[in-house]
Length: 374
Image (tube, rainbow, N blue to C red; front, top):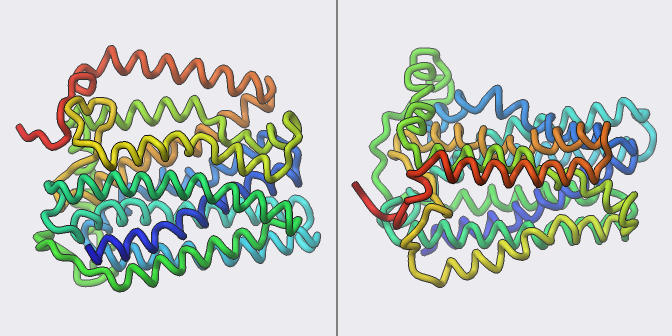
């Protein structure tokens, strides 16, 4: 499958780079401010664009060429990463002052958030169109599983590389530059991908046409309505939202690495990579085993092709912002009660959410094979 090889070969270095960047951002902000609350504000800066832009972004993705949107977003990541590298270099040299440097970093992080709100939905909604048989095929199911493996591997390797580079070079800006290069590579490989499934969507002729109120506003809420009509999918993403929101301890790892465990940036890389090692092992197991007969614990998001961008955009509000707002919540609690209390209370809250979801969403609990059709 040439299309998927191009997709995976580009996505792998891009995700490694973005994981490196996330690790470096946490380390740099805490290294320069020593404030858990300001560390948590990284998540808020990332999340706000998703809250504001998710619905129009999903509609635009459903009106435009998704491959071109994906390429544009990767170029946007590359450009923003380059600016982040220059900003970090200037902050390190003291050219911006402590407050000015911090606010510049928050602004650039928000810029990344604006790009990301288009990137995830365009990438996930494009995948079924570049594989034979589309979303209903076993090929797509296998590709989703391999995508999970690529992500877990990247999330394991990226933080470790970032920690080693920061320790060796005593600076974060080279990490941001490498992350920008990885996204630029994905933009290049994506330019060779060709859609093979027929496109039955009603598409706009150009971005300007798509942004006209007469094209943008009708159906902008259809993704929300679709999820509301699907209790299994809605229950799954709601579970992820609240569980990750309360369990956002990852944001506090720079605090643990620097002040509690005293292991430095290399230790931070190992801490951020550790959760993904187990996830990678499980992803590889799933890639080689038959489809689940009881899939309530592993739901996949599905939707009609014309709605995939909007559904994925709504999903991003639940999934992506839960990590970021969870990081802000963890930083806020750590500011007043300490990092240990923040992590422990978040873990207890996550367990309660899982129990309540299992009791309240029986459709999710009883879900059978992912490929079943009514």
